[in-house]
Length: 485
Ligand code: ADP
Image (cartoon, rainbow, N blue to C red; front, side):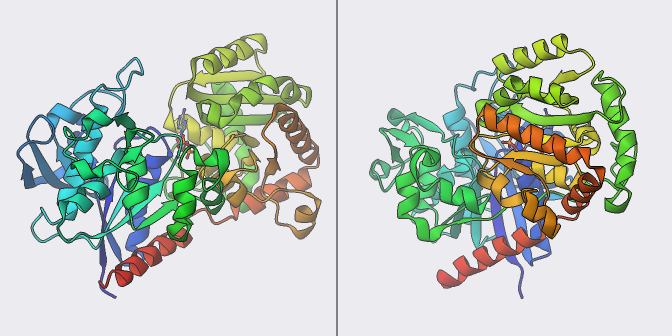
């Protein structure tokens, strides 16, 4: 079968620029899809960190005026990825985070920065680069949402389009007065176009105008079609239900491999998981927790936000301690949560440790050393940390929502009997149910035979991209066939 050319468009990509799971997915998809006969190239903004990493960069197209300055499209490889970099210094040559300044304030020209990314991607999709004609353009989240609109309104023959929702909570809404400055035609203003509650909706445009919509788990695909889960877009998504599907994320099982992870003091696999002990000791030292092999260590690796439900952990901390547990938390975000966890660490020295910040190597150590990984999200499109936890044998304790419901098998009595449980799940997301779940985990931990069985089940779960890559490839091929390609 001939390789299928797909153009992915994204605002962050691991390992070059990452603020969350979106980058992980964008970075892993091309490699996973290669095994399915799909050649994926990725359009990304020319942030300083991206430009610094490019190997053999070559200018392949120019755009005279991309919202206030000239831009070039640079083809290059970086970290094993085939990229088209939108080199537009007036939009992307800024230090730090892709979305906001050092104080967490969104860059004021974000509507143009991400319209610029989308416009440039649309040009590449429509054939601006000699010898490259993708069959499908695949966009991710609101930042790239206008790509489908620009291609649609251009009028030229366009490739098939797929929009993936990684998180419906971020939608990219800007004032309607920007319609003309964004280069959108007057007839784009309407429910069939970019109009969204009297604003220009970038994600809405993608969901209205793309041929296919995917999100990152089957349960989230169902949750977003109704009520609160739809966050204003439920009606649109329900109306397009026949083109909406959920495809689970995987993780890069080379980066996340406890048998050879260079970031770990001790290596292990499913049959030598007792070697996790050395990692647990290292983790206790790093988080200034009491050296105690018996203590059950609860870990957190997360953005600190309402979505992630960590206020429940803060409120339920006494239950963790009453069970003889310790807490090791790594995260950054919400100021109140940061203050709350700092207070908890000060109040319970040796039993609660928190490190505020973003630290890839500490994230690996937590997964390899903690007994339990807490992911009590209020909603969770897919979630990656529970997949890392499965792979590393940290038993996930999660809410029954979105991708958490699709990836964890609750270790209830029947599942234990059948030898299939991989985690502890609770619903609804509230602190009482969280406390009960912690107590249930502690009960299971008391019987180390049961616990070791859980670890083995977890570590044997296939969390790779293989299955999902095949599903994306089938989706692309189905779309191309439908469009007569
Ligand atoms: P989201 O994208 O909603 O933040 P995901 O679970 O999908 O959540 O992905 C989060 C990714 O970011 C994971 O790879 C996780 O390991 C990583 N991560 C989150 N917070 C931190 C942190 N403070 N330090 C290191 N890695 C983190």
